[in-house]
Image (cartoon, rainbow over all chains, first blue to last red):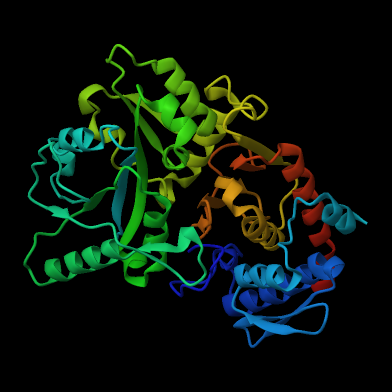
Length: 103
Length: 343
């Protein structure tokens, strides 16, 4: 699936496929990973004054710096919406962002 | 998945690069006896095969406007129709599919199509991309045709054609190819004379060959072609390979977040990615992507060799190794405390 659109519906987004599913209680593990993804997303988005919440185990709610909120199906949709709300993409190679996240 | 998925080989190459000549030769090989062959148009080179089908390259660009999500609807229709006809007994069962693109086609939508359509994703798997490069016209095409570059970058095997013509400069063509794709195996194929086994059945996504594919990439980038270190090619195509190694386990959730973010912001410049990642599990996680098309990552039961460190190869344009490595380390460090929070 294209990681930009992420909405084609054939399967889960690739980013949700790498967790360790070998343990008993795989569903619980998926949920735990989703919650952890949200924690990490919020660390990355903090310098941009954006925030993400988990929604019903199926989506993420992204809140922009001025209070707008939007439902995103997966990580690709989250970053597409981050770009739309900021008016520019959030580049992980951007030295300013890397410095902000190192602090 | 209980049913073995049917491997699909993509044969691409710029106009006049010898795709159809190569295909005509390949079709003589018994290896392709049970293949379905989908060609865009029947040209001057005669193709003789009992399951030859002509398709029109019909593409649909999805609402997002993302080029990688351009879906080849002709392939979806044709492959679905073939499945139905086999089930009805109207066609013999086939075990592989060969798709020849037009000379100006972007091969990535074919790969995206295989993953995006639920039926195709369940029944077919990309076997490999074979790109024909005309040694005579490579310098001009490399300079002027972005389609040429794309076809070369996504290739798993490159067949260098027309090297027997007087005006061909095979070493220059090879250098131009290597600058853009240091990892594909390069084969000289005059008149399409290449054994089918070197091009068909590559299994680039096969579970049991994924680790082998990644280590082959790493070897190619680190040692194989002599002049593939990332600084060497910045001045021509701007396309180069970056090989990274991380001694500590990587946090997969953060890595995926980082990669999704990179593809959103710099996706046009991230041409390919392959990796064996140590995520703390018993075996490595295998990553494989072509532009925005990232195949679902899989965990291997065990490491393929003694080296249990995370190894990642990216083919990028205008992105330095230092930028990627610094960023990845910072993101990974940012993730580490959460294990304590959520424990």
